[in-house]
Image (tube, rainbow, N blue to C red; front, side):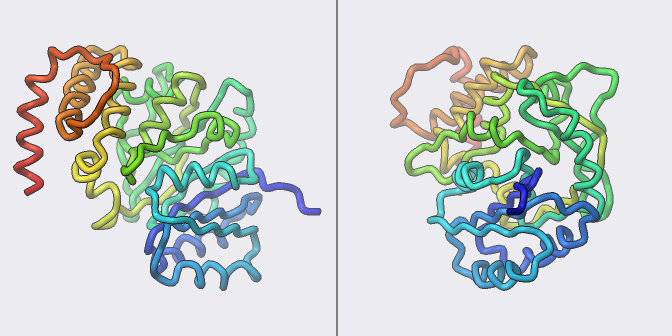
Length: 288
C-alpha cells in the first residue's frame, strides 16, 4: 500500500481546460513528488474531465479528480478539504504553476511547522515575468497570525499552505444564492484560532488572466453581498489598526446596502453608514 502524500496540491477549476496542461507540466517537473494533485471541477462544460482522465494512468504522481455542480471556489475548497489525503493543502489555481524546485523548497518549512497551534505557512509569489508580487515579508517584525501580515501593509497574494486539519476545522461559510466568497474569509477565521508562519521563499508563479476572479472583485462582492459583509465584520472585529477598522466598518455598511433583505444582528456601528452610502452610489454607477 502506498503511503499518503505529505502535500495535497489543490486546483479548483471552471472551464480552464486549456490552461491545465501548463500546470500539469510544472507538477510533472517537480524534483520532489511527495504530493497528490487534487482537482475539484466546479461544473465545467469544456473538456476538463476528459483531459484530466487522460493524465491519470501515466502520471508520476497521484491525481484525484472530483466533479461537482457550480458553486464557487470557496465551496470547491470545502469539498477539496474533505477529499485531501495530505497533511498540507496548497492551492494552485488553474492559471498558475510552480517552479521545478517549489515543493522541494517548501518541504523543510512545512516539516518544521507541524505543531498543532500552527495552521498555515505562507511563501512568496512571482508573476510569469519573474517579478515579485507585492513585497518581501518583513523579517524584523513579529507576525504570528495571518492578520498581522495585513496590519503591516502586506496585502498582496501569497502562496499559502494550510494544514488539512485546520481547513476541515474552519470551513468556508456558504451563503445560499451566493457563488463567490473571497478567500480572505478563511484567513480571518484562521487567525482567530491558529498561528501562521511567513517565509521569503519563491516557487509559485501566477498569471492574472482577464475574466478571472481577481479581475471581477467589485462585481463579485456586489452580487454576493452577504459574504462581503461577513468578511468586513470579521475585519472590524479582528484588526487592531484604527485605519483598517474604519475601512472595514465602512465597507460592511456599503455592502449591506447592496443586500437590503439582510436580517442579522449588527456589530458594526451605524455611524459609518453615511460614508458607505456615498460609496454604494459610486458602485451602482460604475457597474451600469
